[in-house]
Amino acid sequence: MNRQAQSAVLFLLGASLLHAGTTDLYLRYVKAGLRPLLLAAGVVLIATALATAWYERRATNRKKSTEPPTPASPHPEPRISWLLVLPLLALILVAPPALGSYSATRTGTSLQEPLAYPALPATGPLRLSVVDYAGRAVYDDGRTLTGRRIQLTGFLALDRDGTPYLVRMALNCCAADAQPVKVGLTGRIPPVLQPDTWLEITGTYTPHRVKDPVNDGPIPFIEVTAARPVPTPKDPYDETWNT
Image (cartoon, rainbow, N blue to C red):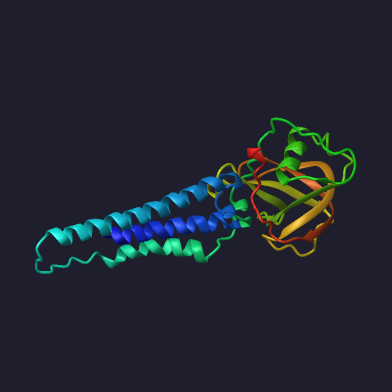
């Protein structure tokens, strides 16, 4: 590519980052805390593209004014290099889905022992993340969960033997390192289960747990008393590990 084409690609890349950062699209790729860096990167790329185009145009005009005319001998750049623009257009035009049941059932649960257990409200239903519930159920033996009405939200995944899990992909930095945390469902489970459906589960703690068939990691269960489908949340990933 010549300099003008390079600056065009840089401009498109910067515009793509700004588009993702000013909408919820960026949450499909990175954690929420990286938004300022994403926007800054987009601004830098656009500024670089404009500066490159300006300097190239200035150099071309200076060369034309100082050199005598010569016979034209064009050397066109290979057109295949413009295929580099396709991923940028895909980023702008196509919003990729968040990682779901396909990744979850092929990756072992990555539950980590919490450093601490934040205090919970003394009354009312407990609205917990899948990661928080799983950590308390496994590593605290459910001491803060017993006898409480609990609500969890996640997407549905079915194991090879048909065991239903409520899953949330936990994020450290970006979607590339997202790993599933799974909670098994027992009790009043909906009769029709469709993988990747987002559900709000209401239930109670049960000490029942199994080992993940993929990596032998612990999977706690929840006794379901009610379940209802809910829309996909704005941020489909869980960033509990970053707090």
